[in-house]
Length: 269
Image (cartoon, rainbow, N blue to C red; front, side, top):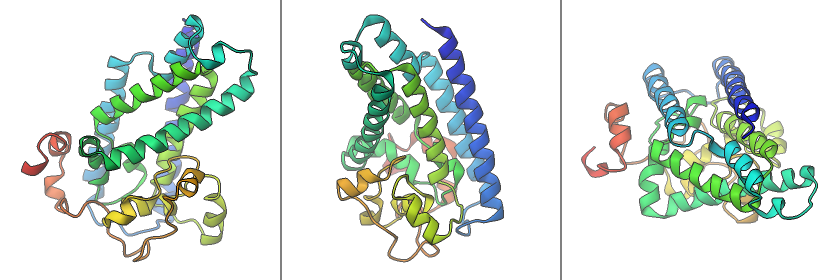
């Protein structure tokens, strides 16, 4: 096992996370898109606690994670690209696209199948949306997502370098597209032809169900257009749209213990 790549993954992902997080936090402070409605300090404490918890859970239960799975597949000659002589650059591009589509499809499934929605609704209970919302996922959902990614990696025989690139892109794009930052509309319309922008993804966090069930893409934006789940803007506009879930509007009910218990005791919280 190439431990150098494993060590490199940790340092690269942590470094990019810190850089993107700081950049988005500064941008949010200097040029916010919306006025926040919930206590920011408490929200950040909750969301960052969940982020740290998820990182520890993944390292404990999946110590080799996605990149390690690619290295195992390479050693064992598992997967499509380990069976055929395909240029690593071409294989890498295909892997990044397939993993991104997998995240899109998984996201749709987690909205429409009740047992998965109970987990994913934790992400949507945030009453505001900013850079910290991008990592607000229930630990069980994170474990399921990692299991799905590892399955795709084994199936494809994905090169470890392309998996590392995808993981970095996924984390960075999640922070970017959840950020409360202002981007001029003309620039936003151009950017979202290729990647998901904050204005595009914010529609997905609307309290209105038909808006929430749209714009499922995380990184590349074209999946929503291809599968007709794209919505250009919220009906009430970005300034007036309500964020979150209709039956979870009281911030006092959304502390860390309640959020972690929500999928299992939803009707009692």
